[in-house]
Image 1 (tube, rainbow, N blue to C red):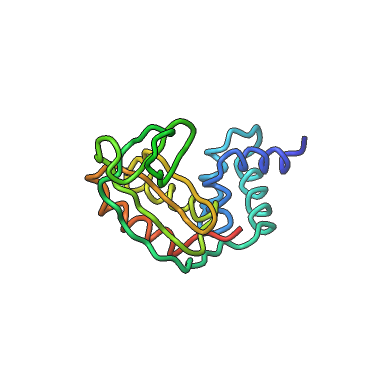
Image 2 (spheres, rainbow, N blue to C red; image 1 turned 90 degrees about the vertical axis):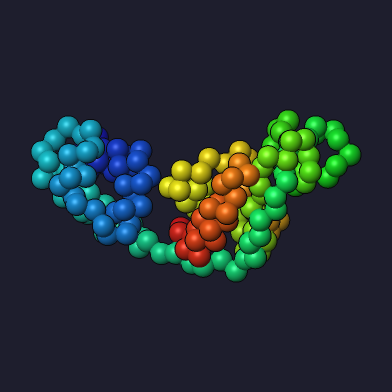
Length: 166
């Protein structure tokens, strides 16, 4: 395998690096040192620079959505008569279900898997750990700890204002 091919393969193992390459914000020498590729640092940096030139530019779009927060969300039995807002495997979450110690952030509108990915990245940056999350048919829902609700709402709104396009 050529040095250029090895560099690309290794860079693609780090999605954040590919995103930074697309955005044009990479110090190529530092990135070359970071990657575990056998070769001269300058040659690896050159391969990264050429790879970045071939990538599509990093762009974002704002999603047309309505975002709201719903408190008092709890875990419920998946077979319960209560209509769950979100069910993932055996876990189901509904208003006034179980303990009610969670908050749901609901976005309705132009949402998809890319929007969910952006939301999860943003929540991670805010150090908010979702309990459950899902997207489907124009709705995105994230369940968080009750105390994180307001911060999660702001993070979701911010994430949906700048969803990366592929």
